[in-house]
Length: 305
Image 1 (spheres, rainbow, N blue to C red):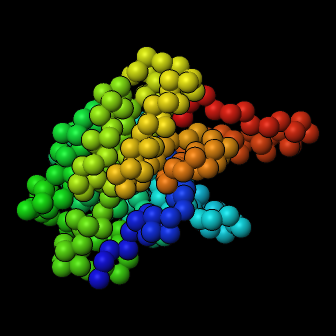
Image 2 (image 1 turned 135 degrees about the vertical axis):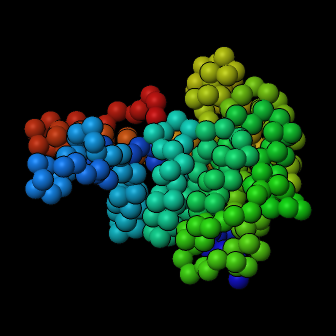
């Protein structure tokens, strides 16, 4: 039986898949205190003492809240969440909680690793990622390498040891069901965000085993030395979109808000983000504060993440 990968299932419906960016960890610590003596009266624990061992709790609760809020509304539910370990505050120690949380809510956790290194990709997949996104794909060779790292031999070179990966696929037991379906079920994605990436995008899109090409519009503009939103920038975006369609691959793009996401969906993008967790929290609190003060202030379009 194939793995239940929500995003891949959504792609089969030939409609735009909506998701959001998860970037942060909670500011509230969980405490694994170390004991200290208390004048022979037992043990005492102090969360902020040098003897304590505390670290931030990953934002699984934030992801679950956002996913359930959408699912309970009249809108179509999210089908994916991008776990951002490149620019976000998330590290690989957070992957397991986040992938299992997102998957339990019926969406696909896609991990953006900091770089296209084999060991980084392996750790994300072994933690339950439904797909891998790597930054800065500049050439077909880069894309082929990422596909190789994502798949088991003889197709690729992924090392074997998915001790916890099946936890992000409800009902899947360790062993054959995961092992035999990982290569065809999990998603390999690369970001096109440089001039060389655009100039070779037609060949990148033809790489066998590559599922999605995602446009990073901010880096694309900076790497090309052009104005974001200008004619040359939009021409590059449209070239990437055409290359994906021609090669039968899925085209994705990062968007900062719903209006931008709607615009890109109308253009034919298969996968769009609608907001980041930070923007969602910021927008909500400004909206509620403005209503409380009777100001009716609307959120402005975001200039960044």
